[in-house]
Image 1 (cartoon, helix red, strand yellow):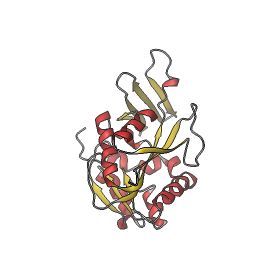
Image 2 (image 1 turned 180 degrees about the vertical axis):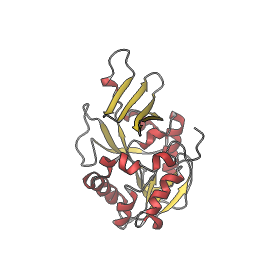
Image 3 (image 1 turned 90 degrees about the vertical axis):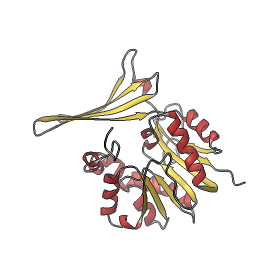
Length: 246
């Protein structure tokens, strides 16, 4: 990786909202914002990996002061170009380590963004960084997938998740290291283009231990934003850890 914007540079940012259109659907966004606005109360919200403002803009529209951290200037430029985007404060940097002023009643990482930190050490640092920004009683919210390892037959390392005449996408897993990557092949004007984004998948129990190391404790875990019970069949989870009030 040589781009100063990380893996979310101009080529990704230019089409991000369209490529992830399902995550921008009104019902999907509202469900997340309802939970986050409730947790924020009269306080401030810190979004790690604020991107193009999918969650931050409607949350700010509810009257919640939002500050974001993001490594990608290209993604933040898209946020700034949207109505209300110039009113949201953003600090450019690595959200595992970057500090901002003030305390927050809620911090959140949505849509698998914790996996953009590709080492366990960086993920642990993220929890510690969030804990330092939360006021007593504040909450840290993560939405992240459950790794699709049950879909891997013996000897297979790849799980496809999109196939069309002009676009193919698949996740590749290394079960020994918990490294994975999302890989995309797209045909544009008769030419194939390929790009890959690395991740580190992480289990719920592992996240709970990271939270414990940071002085946080689990308060809720759901299947999704509408608070369905989390079960062994869940494909993702929304988890909330609390910073003790005393």
